[in-house]
Length: 351
Image (cartoon, rainbow, N blue to C red; front, side, top):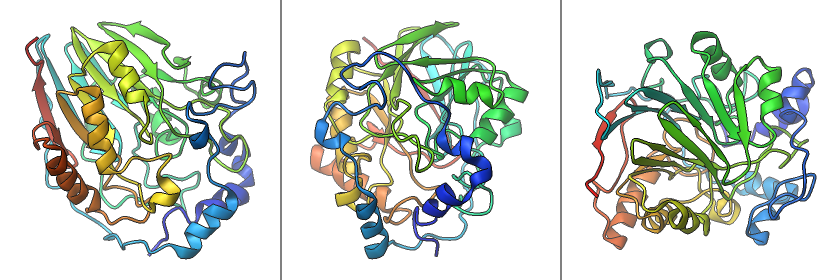
Protein backbone atom coordinates (compact mmCIF):
# COMPACT_ATOMS: atom_id res chain seq x y z
CA UNK A 1 0.00 0.00 0.00
CA UNK A 2 1.19 3.50 -0.82
CA UNK A 3 1.83 5.53 2.32
CA UNK A 4 -0.20 8.74 2.28
CA UNK A 5 1.81 11.67 0.96
CA UNK A 6 4.99 9.71 1.58
CA UNK A 7 6.15 9.91 -2.01
CA UNK A 8 5.59 13.66 -2.32
CA UNK A 9 8.98 14.61 -0.91
CA UNK A 10 10.64 12.73 -3.73
CA UNK A 11 8.31 14.35 -6.22
CA UNK A 12 9.06 17.83 -4.92
CA UNK A 13 12.83 17.37 -4.98
CA UNK A 14 13.39 15.02 -7.92
CA UNK A 15 11.30 16.45 -10.75
CA UNK A 16 13.66 19.24 -11.79
CA UNK A 17 12.15 19.35 -15.26
CA UNK A 18 8.98 20.72 -13.72
CA UNK A 19 10.64 23.15 -11.31
CA UNK A 20 8.51 26.11 -12.40
CA UNK A 21 5.36 24.05 -11.98
CA UNK A 22 6.50 22.88 -8.55
CA UNK A 23 7.06 26.45 -7.41
CA UNK A 24 3.58 27.45 -8.48
CA UNK A 25 4.74 30.63 -10.22
CA UNK A 26 6.26 33.82 -8.82
CA UNK A 27 3.62 34.24 -6.12
CA UNK A 28 2.11 37.50 -4.92
CA UNK A 29 3.84 40.82 -4.49
CA UNK A 30 2.02 43.62 -2.72
CA UNK A 31 1.52 45.66 0.41
CA UNK A 32 1.55 43.89 3.79
CA UNK A 33 -1.77 43.16 5.52
CA UNK A 34 -3.04 41.27 8.54
CA UNK A 35 -2.42 38.01 6.62
CA UNK A 36 0.49 38.96 4.32
CA UNK A 37 3.94 40.11 5.46
CA UNK A 38 5.11 41.32 2.04
CA UNK A 39 6.54 37.95 1.04
CA UNK A 40 4.32 35.17 2.39
CA UNK A 41 0.73 34.73 3.51
CA UNK A 42 -0.29 33.57 6.96
CA UNK A 43 -3.42 32.47 8.78
CA UNK A 44 -5.34 34.79 11.07
CA UNK A 45 -4.49 32.49 14.00
CA UNK A 46 -0.72 32.90 14.61
CA UNK A 47 -0.47 29.42 16.11
CA UNK A 48 -1.90 27.90 12.92
CA UNK A 49 0.46 29.96 10.75
CA UNK A 50 3.57 28.33 12.16
CA UNK A 51 2.87 25.10 10.30
CA UNK A 52 4.58 21.77 10.87
CA UNK A 53 8.31 21.40 10.52
CA UNK A 54 10.06 19.04 8.12
CA UNK A 55 11.07 16.97 11.14
CA UNK A 56 7.42 16.65 12.20
CA UNK A 57 6.53 15.55 8.68
CA UNK A 58 9.17 12.83 8.87
CA UNK A 59 7.87 11.83 12.30
CA UNK A 60 4.39 11.36 10.82
CA UNK A 61 5.75 9.27 7.95
CA UNK A 62 7.87 7.21 10.34
CA UNK A 63 5.00 6.50 12.77
CA UNK A 64 2.12 6.32 10.27
CA UNK A 65 -0.48 3.61 10.89
CA UNK A 66 -2.50 4.28 7.77
CA UNK A 67 -5.64 2.21 7.22
CA UNK A 68 -5.38 0.42 3.86
CA UNK A 69 -7.69 1.62 1.10
CA UNK A 70 -9.13 -0.56 -1.66
CA UNK A 71 -7.29 -0.46 -4.97
CA UNK A 72 -10.48 0.40 -6.87
CA UNK A 73 -14.12 1.21 -6.10
CA UNK A 74 -16.90 1.17 -8.69
CA UNK A 75 -19.29 4.11 -8.65
CA UNK A 76 -22.94 3.26 -8.10
CA UNK A 77 -24.63 6.61 -8.84
CA UNK A 78 -25.64 8.03 -12.21
CA UNK A 79 -25.67 11.82 -12.66
CA UNK A 80 -29.08 13.37 -13.25
CA UNK A 81 -28.23 16.76 -14.71
CA UNK A 82 -31.25 19.05 -14.95
CA UNK A 83 -32.57 20.23 -18.27
CA UNK A 84 -33.96 23.38 -16.72
CA UNK A 85 -33.70 25.19 -13.39
CA UNK A 86 -35.88 27.90 -11.97
CA UNK A 87 -34.55 31.00 -10.21
CA UNK A 88 -35.13 29.27 -6.88
CA UNK A 89 -33.19 26.09 -7.64
CA UNK A 90 -29.67 24.73 -7.92
CA UNK A 91 -28.30 21.33 -8.82
CA UNK A 92 -25.16 19.85 -7.30
CA UNK A 93 -23.34 16.85 -8.81
CA UNK A 94 -20.44 15.23 -6.93
CA UNK A 95 -17.70 14.51 -9.47
CA UNK A 96 -15.03 13.31 -7.02
CA UNK A 97 -12.86 14.41 -4.07
CA UNK A 98 -13.67 18.14 -3.82
CA UNK A 99 -14.89 18.62 -7.40
CA UNK A 100 -18.56 19.53 -7.77
CA UNK A 101 -20.60 20.67 -10.72
CA UNK A 102 -22.85 23.49 -9.47
CA UNK A 103 -25.70 24.46 -11.78
CA UNK A 104 -27.90 27.51 -11.43
CA UNK A 105 -30.31 29.04 -13.91
CA UNK A 106 -27.99 30.37 -16.62
CA UNK A 107 -24.70 29.39 -14.93
CA UNK A 108 -22.58 26.22 -14.61
CA UNK A 109 -19.45 26.13 -12.46
CA UNK A 110 -16.87 23.62 -11.22
CA UNK A 111 -15.10 23.68 -7.86
CA UNK A 112 -11.41 22.68 -7.74
CA UNK A 113 -11.72 20.39 -10.79
CA UNK A 114 -9.52 17.27 -10.68
CA UNK A 115 -9.87 14.69 -13.47
CA UNK A 116 -6.26 13.47 -13.48
CA UNK A 117 -5.30 9.96 -12.42
CA UNK A 118 -3.03 11.26 -9.66
CA UNK A 119 -2.94 14.32 -7.40
CA UNK A 120 0.73 14.84 -8.20
CA UNK A 121 3.13 16.82 -10.41
CA UNK A 122 4.08 13.66 -12.33
CA UNK A 123 1.95 10.84 -13.78
CA UNK A 124 4.00 7.98 -12.41
CA UNK A 125 3.83 8.50 -8.65
CA UNK A 126 1.85 10.24 -5.92
CA UNK A 127 -1.69 9.76 -4.57
CA UNK A 128 -3.73 7.80 -7.13
CA UNK A 129 -7.49 7.87 -7.49
CA UNK A 130 -9.41 4.75 -6.40
CA UNK A 131 -12.58 5.56 -8.35
CA UNK A 132 -13.44 7.13 -11.68
CA UNK A 133 -14.91 10.64 -11.82
CA UNK A 134 -18.64 10.42 -11.23
CA UNK A 135 -19.32 12.64 -14.25
CA UNK A 136 -17.15 12.07 -17.32
CA UNK A 137 -15.25 15.08 -18.63
CA UNK A 138 -16.93 14.81 -22.03
CA UNK A 139 -20.35 14.75 -20.34
CA UNK A 140 -19.86 18.15 -18.70
CA UNK A 141 -22.27 20.87 -19.75
CA UNK A 142 -20.90 24.26 -20.84
CA UNK A 143 -18.68 25.41 -17.95
CA UNK A 144 -18.85 29.15 -17.34
CA UNK A 145 -16.77 29.54 -14.17
CA UNK A 146 -14.11 27.47 -12.41
CA UNK A 147 -13.24 28.04 -8.75
CA UNK A 148 -9.66 27.25 -7.63
CA UNK A 149 -9.41 27.55 -3.86
CA UNK A 150 -5.59 27.19 -3.63
CA UNK A 151 -2.64 25.64 -5.41
CA UNK A 152 -2.22 22.17 -3.87
CA UNK A 153 -2.19 19.36 -6.43
CA UNK A 154 -5.51 17.88 -5.33
CA UNK A 155 -7.17 21.29 -5.90
CA UNK A 156 -5.23 22.99 -8.69
CA UNK A 157 -4.86 20.29 -11.34
CA UNK A 158 -3.14 21.87 -14.35
CA UNK A 159 -4.00 19.09 -16.79
CA UNK A 160 -7.70 19.38 -15.99
CA UNK A 161 -7.64 23.18 -16.12
CA UNK A 162 -5.95 23.10 -19.52
CA UNK A 163 -8.55 20.63 -20.82
CA UNK A 164 -11.28 22.96 -19.58
CA UNK A 165 -9.58 25.90 -21.29
CA UNK A 166 -9.50 24.08 -24.61
CA UNK A 167 -13.07 22.82 -24.34
CA UNK A 168 -14.93 25.62 -22.52
CA UNK A 169 -12.69 28.68 -22.05
CA UNK A 170 -14.16 29.36 -18.60
CA UNK A 171 -13.52 32.27 -16.26
CA UNK A 172 -11.17 31.04 -13.51
CA UNK A 173 -11.41 32.61 -10.04
CA UNK A 174 -8.66 32.06 -7.47
CA UNK A 175 -6.55 33.56 -4.68
CA UNK A 176 -3.77 36.12 -4.91
CA UNK A 177 -0.57 34.91 -6.55
CA UNK A 178 -2.09 32.20 -8.75
CA UNK A 179 -2.98 34.21 -11.86
CA UNK A 180 0.53 34.49 -13.35
CA UNK A 181 1.09 30.76 -12.87
CA UNK A 182 -2.19 29.84 -14.56
CA UNK A 183 -1.68 32.30 -17.41
CA UNK A 184 1.81 30.86 -17.96
CA UNK A 185 0.12 27.50 -18.53
CA UNK A 186 -2.35 28.74 -21.08
CA UNK A 187 -5.42 29.84 -19.12
CA UNK A 188 -6.66 33.04 -20.71
CA UNK A 189 -9.33 34.35 -18.31
CA UNK A 190 -8.10 34.39 -14.72
CA UNK A 191 -9.05 36.74 -11.90
CA UNK A 192 -7.36 36.60 -8.50
CA UNK A 193 -8.55 37.99 -5.18
CA UNK A 194 -7.61 38.77 -1.63
CA UNK A 195 -9.93 37.65 1.16
CA UNK A 196 -13.29 39.43 1.06
CA UNK A 197 -12.72 40.61 -2.52
CA UNK A 198 -14.85 39.39 -5.39
CA UNK A 199 -16.46 39.89 -8.76
CA UNK A 200 -19.71 39.53 -10.67
CA UNK A 201 -20.20 37.27 -13.66
CA UNK A 202 -23.51 36.74 -15.41
CA UNK A 203 -26.22 36.29 -12.79
CA UNK A 204 -23.73 35.56 -9.98
CA UNK A 205 -21.49 37.38 -7.53
CA UNK A 206 -18.43 35.65 -6.09
CA UNK A 207 -16.54 36.56 -2.91
CA UNK A 208 -13.23 34.97 -1.93
CA UNK A 209 -13.32 34.15 1.77
CA UNK A 210 -10.72 33.28 4.44
CA UNK A 211 -9.67 29.75 5.26
CA UNK A 212 -7.12 28.27 7.65
CA UNK A 213 -4.66 26.37 5.50
CA UNK A 214 -1.41 26.91 3.54
CA UNK A 215 -0.12 26.80 -0.04
CA UNK A 216 2.77 25.39 -2.05
CA UNK A 217 3.51 22.92 -4.81
CA UNK A 218 6.94 21.77 -3.64
CA UNK A 219 9.71 22.62 -1.20
CA UNK A 220 10.04 26.15 -2.61
CA UNK A 221 7.45 28.89 -2.65
CA UNK A 222 5.56 27.94 0.49
CA UNK A 223 2.69 30.34 1.26
CA UNK A 224 3.54 32.68 -1.64
CA UNK A 225 -0.03 32.31 -2.91
CA UNK A 226 -3.28 32.71 -0.99
CA UNK A 227 -5.74 29.99 0.03
CA UNK A 228 -9.45 30.45 0.67
CA UNK A 229 -13.05 29.55 -0.15
CA UNK A 230 -15.89 31.21 -2.04
CA UNK A 231 -19.37 32.54 -1.36
CA UNK A 232 -21.50 32.40 -4.51
CA UNK A 233 -24.79 34.30 -4.71
CA UNK A 234 -27.22 33.70 -7.60
CA UNK A 235 -30.85 34.86 -7.66
CA UNK A 236 -30.86 35.13 -3.88
CA UNK A 237 -29.38 31.64 -3.37
CA UNK A 238 -26.20 31.67 -1.28
CA UNK A 239 -23.64 28.85 -1.57
CA UNK A 240 -20.40 28.54 0.40
CA UNK A 241 -17.51 26.43 -0.92
CA UNK A 242 -14.94 26.10 1.86
CA UNK A 243 -12.03 24.69 -0.14
CA UNK A 244 -9.47 23.18 2.26
CA UNK A 245 -9.46 24.45 5.83
CA UNK A 246 -8.99 23.78 9.49
CA UNK A 247 -11.68 24.78 11.95
CA UNK A 248 -11.41 28.45 12.97
CA UNK A 249 -13.33 31.67 13.46
CA UNK A 250 -13.76 32.42 9.76
CA UNK A 251 -17.01 30.44 9.59
CA UNK A 252 -18.60 32.82 12.09
CA UNK A 253 -17.10 35.78 10.21
CA UNK A 254 -18.67 34.56 6.96
CA UNK A 255 -22.08 34.25 8.60
CA UNK A 256 -21.72 37.72 10.10
CA UNK A 257 -21.04 39.22 6.66
CA UNK A 258 -23.44 37.23 4.50
CA UNK A 259 -26.05 35.75 6.82
CA UNK A 260 -27.04 32.10 6.80
CA UNK A 261 -26.08 30.10 3.69
CA UNK A 262 -28.43 27.89 1.72
CA UNK A 263 -25.73 25.32 0.89
CA UNK A 264 -22.28 24.78 2.41
CA UNK A 265 -19.68 22.46 0.87
CA UNK A 266 -17.47 21.46 3.80
CA UNK A 267 -14.39 19.17 3.87
CA UNK A 268 -14.66 16.08 6.08
CA UNK A 269 -11.60 14.02 5.04
CA UNK A 270 -7.78 13.98 5.20
CA UNK A 271 -7.65 14.57 8.96
CA UNK A 272 -5.52 11.84 10.57
CA UNK A 273 -3.29 11.96 12.54
CA UNK A 274 -4.88 14.88 14.35
CA UNK A 275 -1.64 16.12 15.92
CA UNK A 276 -0.31 16.77 12.41
CA UNK A 277 -3.48 17.67 10.47
CA UNK A 278 -5.55 19.68 12.95
CA UNK A 279 -4.54 23.18 11.84
CA UNK A 280 -5.05 22.54 8.12
CA UNK A 281 -7.90 19.98 7.80
CA UNK A 282 -11.15 19.66 9.72
CA UNK A 283 -12.36 16.30 10.94
CA UNK A 284 -16.12 15.49 10.70
CA UNK A 285 -16.76 16.73 14.25
CA UNK A 286 -15.31 20.14 13.37
CA UNK A 287 -17.16 20.15 10.05
CA UNK A 288 -20.47 19.82 11.93
CA UNK A 289 -19.44 22.70 14.17
CA UNK A 290 -18.65 24.74 11.05
CA UNK A 291 -22.11 23.85 9.67
CA UNK A 292 -23.67 25.23 12.85
CA UNK A 293 -21.44 28.34 12.85
CA UNK A 294 -22.56 29.10 9.29
CA UNK A 295 -26.23 28.51 10.01
CA UNK A 296 -26.29 26.42 6.84
CA UNK A 297 -29.65 25.15 5.68
CA UNK A 298 -27.92 22.20 3.97
CA UNK A 299 -24.29 21.08 4.13
CA UNK A 300 -22.60 18.50 1.92
CA UNK A 301 -19.32 16.80 2.78
CA UNK A 302 -16.30 17.12 0.47
CA UNK A 303 -12.63 16.06 0.29
CA UNK A 304 -12.98 12.31 0.84
CA UNK A 305 -13.23 8.96 -0.89
CA UNK A 306 -11.03 9.42 -3.98
CA UNK A 307 -7.34 9.98 -3.11
CA UNK A 308 -5.72 8.58 0.03
CA UNK A 309 -3.90 11.62 1.36
CA UNK A 310 -3.74 10.81 5.09
CA UNK A 311 -4.11 7.93 7.54
CA UNK A 312 -7.87 7.39 7.97
CA UNK A 313 -9.73 4.66 6.08
CA UNK A 314 -11.81 5.38 3.00
CA UNK A 315 -15.15 5.19 4.86
CA UNK A 316 -14.00 6.61 8.21
CA UNK A 317 -15.17 10.18 7.39
CA UNK A 318 -18.69 8.88 6.70
CA UNK A 319 -18.91 6.99 10.00
CA UNK A 320 -17.38 9.88 11.96
CA UNK A 321 -19.80 12.34 10.35
CA UNK A 322 -22.77 10.20 11.35
CA UNK A 323 -21.56 10.14 14.97
CA UNK A 324 -20.88 13.90 15.00
CA UNK A 325 -24.34 14.67 13.60
CA UNK A 326 -25.87 12.58 16.36
CA UNK A 327 -23.87 14.37 19.08
CA UNK A 328 -24.96 17.79 17.81
CA UNK A 329 -28.55 16.92 16.93
CA UNK A 330 -28.08 17.58 13.20
CA UNK A 331 -30.19 15.45 10.86
CA UNK A 332 -28.75 13.63 7.86
CA UNK A 333 -30.88 15.88 5.64
CA UNK A 334 -29.13 18.96 7.02
CA UNK A 335 -25.59 17.58 6.65
CA UNK A 336 -25.21 14.83 4.12
CA UNK A 337 -22.76 13.22 1.73
CA UNK A 338 -23.33 12.26 -1.89
CA UNK A 339 -22.29 9.17 -3.77
CA UNK A 340 -19.69 9.88 -6.43
CA UNK A 341 -21.75 10.85 -9.45
CA UNK A 342 -24.92 11.62 -7.48
CA UNK A 343 -26.92 14.76 -8.29
CA UNK A 344 -28.74 16.70 -5.56
CA UNK A 345 -31.36 19.22 -6.61
CA UNK A 346 -32.20 21.85 -4.02
CA UNK A 347 -34.95 24.46 -3.95
CA UNK A 348 -34.16 27.73 -2.24
CA UNK A 349 -35.53 27.54 1.33
CA UNK A 350 -38.36 29.98 2.03
CA UNK A 351 -37.36 33.22 3.71
